[in-house]
Length: 193
Image (cartoon, rainbow, N blue to C red; front, side):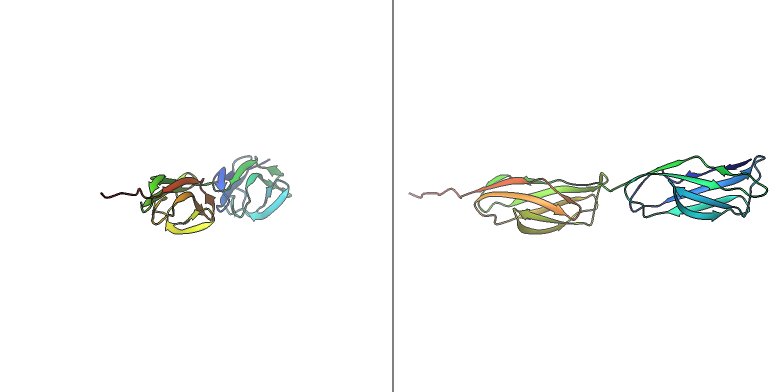
């Protein structure tokens, strides 16, 4: 009999990451079998045919997987000396990145001419995402862009908003915030006697 092992470097990866599969082929006395062909499968699809080294070891880096769940296994078909063997199944889950963009405004109600500070945080996989461009909009009108700090936070001071209601939102290529409402009122008139 032969024994074929298979391990993966990670059970969960993101879509732009790789997983490295390694394994060893030995006989029933734990002696490595070198120069043997081992087939790596993803489900029923052949990924590659690998050759073991003098220590019976083989490896394969797999990348470019789309989001989903995968089952990998290695197969040794045997030869005149050694019998066929299969590895156990190694499951790998591939995830898409998750993005989140928050927004707040202070103050949300003010008289004309008051500066409004809009701020928030952009995260990627729950971690602050820095050096990214965020565009602020009032409805469909751009209010300009701001670059996130290393911790994913951003802040922009808006000046000259017109009297009335404004719906402010933040947009990144991978995420969009909710809308925050800002109301600008007319300046109070002062009568001098």
